[in-house]
Figure (cartoon, rainbow over the protein chains, first blue to last red):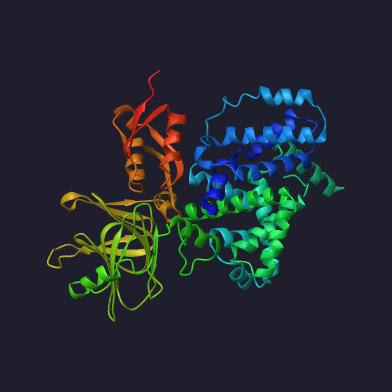
Length: 190
Length: 322
């Protein structure tokens, strides 16, 4: 399969499940630090990359099984027997999915993306919108904004990381976020 | 968002940004490969970052509904289009077939896209044509004219402003534009939809008495058998959905299965047939690769309790009996 098709397949079938699997990992396996979870997720992508996509019917169950295997291996390497944790993993009832694939309309995806982009700091937002919505090159954006290409590329990198994080990364619950906002506001006042 | 910064992710995105601008210079390419090989984590982070970035390209292009075609597409979108194009050659498709035509009525070049192919044709004045699957057009440019004829299929026109009128001939009709983006679909029902600017639709037979029909952005006209004529408003979102083929995708937003199947069948030699009248009316929401019949059928099987039976090159759909 062509490389680009692979990336697109991953974007369509695996990325949407990343927040869920991160939540699941941190809830079920409370002993795992966020860094270990990152490692597991990265390893999962390597494994997924080498899989034969055509045989995969359900990205979610596939992601779960890949992560579960990675986790088993991790424990083996660490010589730590986390019986409870592994038992939990094995007991996972993947069949009980909320719809085998989450298929959202392009419109919804777009609206979600716009919401996230609107939250970006001003420069990042300008660069991201020009690159992804207007399809301008880094050079063209640099010219438009009167910045160096290097600066634009750096804004773009930070914007991409932030948008990806918001859309697919570990996510605070709304409650935690509002708590944090309140804390920040209180801090400012002090 | 978590305040925890993941350095590996930031590195991965740095490379994604560079790579999407075009091929890396050899030295940087080596640096990139060294970085990738350093630890599997780097590779994993890169795969994830690249997939995410492509996803944003696609969502941006799909739903922005306009401006997707730039005269010189750059970076990611060019690659997306390249991916949508099959390996078959773009230029000079009908070089000699076209030559025979020259002597006849239409002096010009013939462009044909094959099944499941999206073909981009850049014209000398900066206008572009994007041909959807199984489409055939003839292009005739001259000192005083810019004429296109659609023999079959569907095309999206991005017209650059110029002195010469830009006309598209389709069936019994002519579409005239100065500067506009519009799509023409030559099917059982002919449709012309405008995304930007405005166009005029008039009968090819100049003796016919009919005022040119003016269409502005977000309007479309449907012409059925016998010249039955309807002008309808069409939203940006709907245009984006219908023109998703630009990026090699098809998008359904609650269309009945029979319409969805008909659309999927346009792009593939593998035909899908649904004889079940109840099933045919089920509403489908989804985004699929235009030639990816497999995923589409899998989705029906897993989400709609459909049983798919392959007979020859035809996939028959029926409700799974309990």
